[in-house]
Image (tube, rainbow, N blue to C red; front, side, top):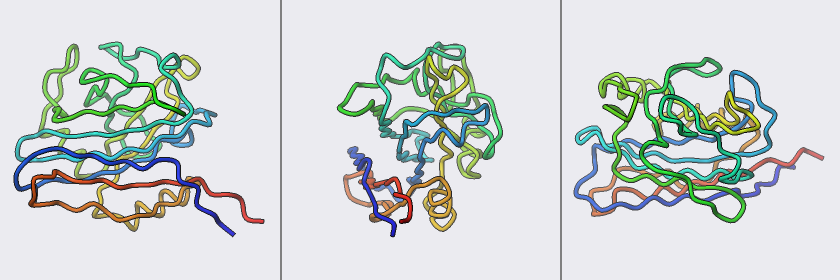
Length: 208
């Protein structure tokens, strides 16, 4: 019998006006998704809210099993985490340097990256990407997050972003990777709250 063991609950709050044009994406970062191979036991969960009118996004990501000392500077800007553009099990170029916009903080049991109102494209230090190209990749679910560490310099964890419209695919994806997704699905709000992303992931116990 499968039992759900919650790993993290994410809540993203931001002030704003009507947000019917905000898109919501979710991802779990696991070693099994890394195309170059990783045996890490760390895991991450994240939620991204993207407003396609002002091209700004909010991100909340928690990674359990890693510390700040584990992170490895990587890429043109020497930062440990990026968004890349490629389908599952394929590698692609950096499109958003998440580490350029802010740094991880240490929390009990892991590290957290919280970014507010940042751009997914444009000039980011030594990186430049076209806003339209990044947005298209986001809409077609080819954006993935990857974190780099001293133990796995080619990538320790990876997570493909999934649009909330594809929750069927999203659920199957997590089941295949040993996770159970539960809880309400955030939807665009017209109130002053950009969105409350309540998302919990759990690692499944083996069936007895």
